[in-house]
Length: 379
Image (cartoon, rainbow, N blue to C red; front, side):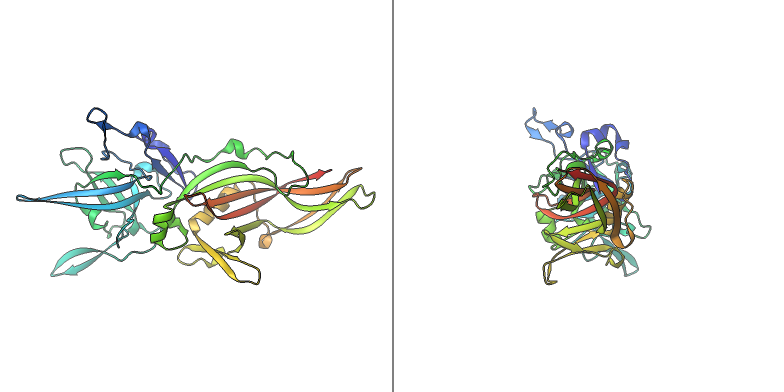
């Protein structure tokens, strides 16, 4: 899960792009202060001269080859995503090609006693695979804005268009990428409880948003990779807190107390608006599937989350006090007393992770019930 930082701020203070907890990273957003102009302010310069590269832009990688009087210009399009759990100034990236057949991984073969390097077939991203991680550095070619890439694997190779020495890169704005400010968790807001002043007829209180992140599409599995690049290059995560009613009753006599002794789920997921099921111990290729079923057990929809995302959510919840019960259930045994009441409601604090596409549509949400925060409401 990634926070965002303005490019101008990162250029001034490179150390601000440090990881914040496990499976985290930083996405760079091109802001107005970082943009330069030429021709008396009429022409926007799209050539990038310095690292790091922005993630809200598609990059056009260019390489010029001169052979006598012949000049050949190669151009490839790519998104460069910072590697998770690495500081931004390490300049380590995943290379994601949005068009064509290549996806940024390479292989090597041997032919005629010479080592040749061939781009391999596209494959899903494994964030832990060093063969899919590339280090980019400035290349001294007489002017600024030239770069070279190397693989983090000792016997690995970058894709051919990044292997060349002295390539340049230019930004391209795409309509389906709109990254906003995402500062991760707000510890001050998270320490606050949601407002409890609402009618007992309501099942939920108003939500309090306490955190925001983004995830590149390669950490979320829905549709095909090609479709995801087109419709939602990034996904938005928000963490919100609310009160949820888990028990309610009316006073049918003159009782002055309510006895609660029941077992409740402490973790739930909804996929496409229906209850979801998942098994973290049965991940396939590092992906945990959340499957939504309609009545009758018919499968309606499914979404896959990389295990790094699932682990990050649970880590975030554990440091917020969520313990998790045996088998995903917690027993609540309480006796509440009050005189002259008509209705009673018992509420638990719920923290919810919402996952949305770039168009704002909801993909799924995961609820974590904090049973160390339980409150009663009488009317």
